[in-house]
Length: 308
Image 1 (cartoon, rainbow, N blue to C red):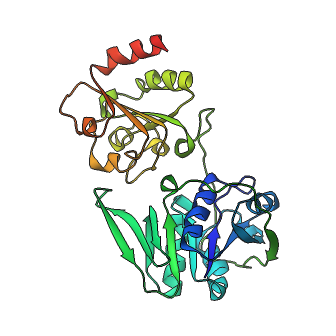
Image 2: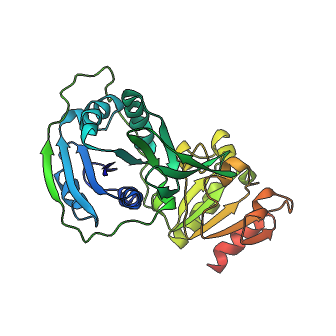
């Protein structure tokens, strides 16, 4: 069995999510190769070659792959699949964008957000916002799979795989990258942070998130939010944790003023330790919390900041 893992990167650094997808691929058995598609991403390919268990790295470099747009990635990946039995990618914004197009082109069903590998053709994935786990057995000749990074340990970096250059698709394609606006922050990235503190509708306003941000800075934590807080305009969309936001599994997750709708729980319930602060003692968040404080957050947060 041969498996292709599509690397997640920013053309300069390899994402930890790639190592975790490699772990999932190794659990399927067989040979694992990594595809690094980008522009001027030679350092990323060299980094991928060091992942333990990787047989070879395929490096496609060109301007059409600079942002890993779906059309270009399909044109690159589909011809390669004659040599592979499965293709895996992290279930990130990028992977969720191009891999469904690859599955459609190959005329197979995609298996999304797997959290466990039971056999080379059998996988476990969450359904109903994580309230149930579904075991899926695929009979497709080629498996197309996205991997939930929070469910797998990262593969080590003691490997020495060979790097082979392959041609990037020429284009032009119907879609083109126009621009992006990135949030600049000195805090850790939300999905990679070891500590996350999130606020919900109970924060009352965007200005009140300053209380959370001060505590986050003292803890070296990332700041998150529930969908209710994002929809209310308190914080930007990239703060959102949940089924339709980012899935996180830090060592410590602090939920402040968050009731605990199932959509939010789906994005954080795998956290190692969960702390909830809410004045409603019947809030669903307390059902998953390891530690719960029934209190007015506007009194509790200043006290926590002072104690820290």
